[in-house]
Length: 192
Image 1 (spheres, rainbow, N blue to C red):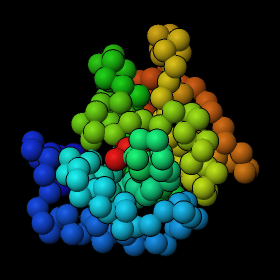
Image 2: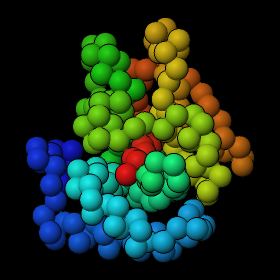
Image 3: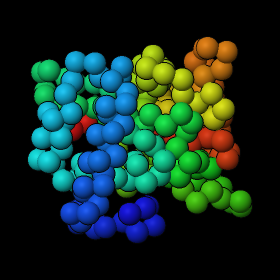
Image 4: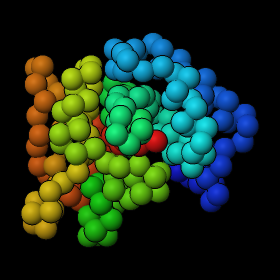
């Protein structure tokens, strides 16, 4: 299921569910350095209790995010999944920052906005801090960039911020919120 065919009840078929679990488990086991003290059986058990979260994870997967577990909150019992694709997810590029930015464009509008896609997918846009934490787990956005949650004082002035990694350094930049580029998308996270 992609953004073009959103299922209103947000339930996966048994086949879709099994395929997603297989994909997530393989990625989890291949990347144990992201979650060294966690066991897949506990993650799977948690996911089974939240079918709406499975739908969101499938949306992340279908748009190229390659979601994986990057944290476990012992107080809340929640696992955090984040898009761990090497580059900004392909199915989420060429988008402006938010709906207001999209509405402000008079011509050459992108098809969507990062913030609205997050809402539709049931995920959160990464903050700058969360993006920097992700970069501690691997090399991400070495050729692309990703919109990150923009502080209100910047957004109120028409701007938005994005990050990437070059020269072993995470950079944060600004642009007009209505801008969009083929190499800029966004990364999201989901707590389960």
